[in-house]
Length: 97
Image 1 (cartoon, helix red, strand yellow):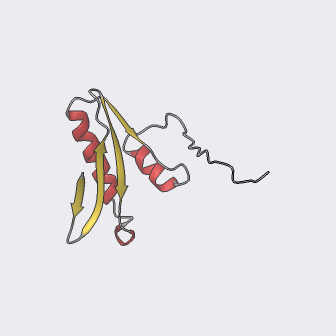
Image 2: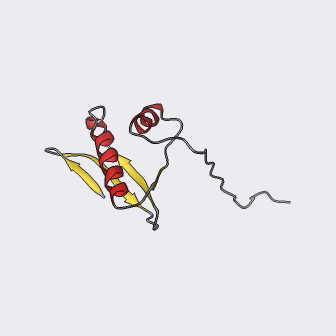
């Protein structure tokens, strides 16, 4: 996990889920008062560069399609959309008969 500290914690990002050929970038967060200054963009780009330099050719980054800002940023630093993912939760029915 990388934490950017500039007189306060301004951003964080982590590399998780390692395999011999890949890694997942996640837990990207910037406190509201520090957003819009490029902290997370720089942190994700640098962590991605370091992971690739370790010899892992594949990087994965899940993002919320409803967030156009983060999607533009990730595209600008080289990430490309691959697929959409849907999560489903199956719960027991509580209806009585």
